[in-house]
Length: 107
Length: 125
Image (cartoon, rainbow over all chains, first blue to last red; front, side, top):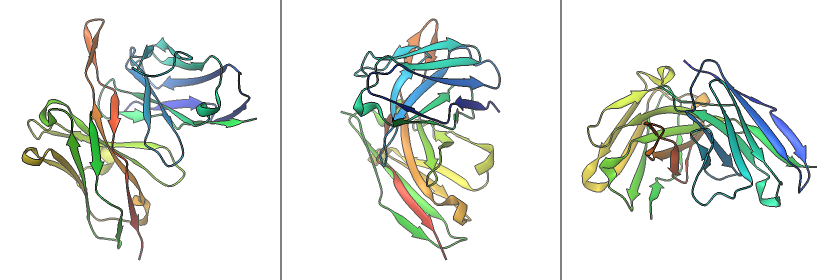
């Protein structure tokens, strides 16, 4: 099974900061990598699919990159509504798997 | 618009079973795989498996094999996830999540674009 490892597990940042979250797969997953945002008590929301494609309706300050085993999610200018937990997930093969999550907190 | 509405919270005793429903609307139910994902309190997301609503075919995560059953009723556009032999470790919010199909670079991508609101299952003696 493919394992997904995210780092950091949490970070503190200020409004306006550039934030980068990394995700590593235990083997190559090409670009079958998705990113989700989850706010407290809510279902996850799809942000990025196919490593770098922005889901419809998601602000352009979110971007994704990478292929193979190493991926990043970048928020170019952190907004108050972006404080949440972010998960990567591979869809290369079954079983699907999520990373452990990165909690983005207010500094 | 696509909507997934799940059944209400459940409290179960250890050893019991629970069946969670997910009623879909706003699209052709048989056209897209339905996944089930759970989240224990304060923990991350865990994929449990998925069902093809058209054929009824299923893929389960190994750790749930033998304990989980995913079914569907196409006449009412509803998917079900039943988990048996519950323990306290199964206390979690259970989500149904529908795939979408995006085509690009000669292949299909199937992220989970639509999610139910979640169903809390609490297991306690």
